[in-house]
Length: 68
Image (tube, rainbow, N blue to C red; front, top):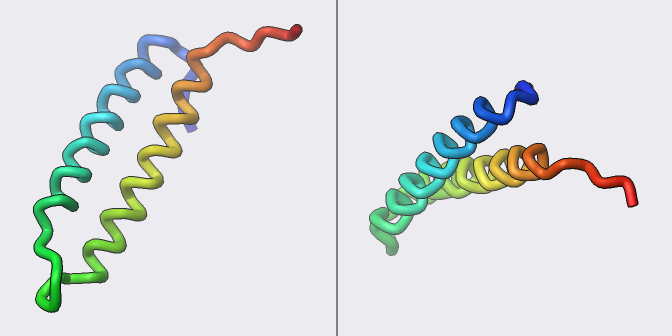
């Protein structure tokens, strides 16, 4: 899925973090209440969780494996 090149991973991490932050702001702006589009809100939240998982995966790739 992703390459092991550190610069590429760092660049992709920055992109994912920006998208995650933008999605968080968009979710916060969505109106709550009876007129709220629950399907859209659910999809946005699922996308945000997927981004969080991808960010964690890439951060783990940056940490060198230390066999203790």
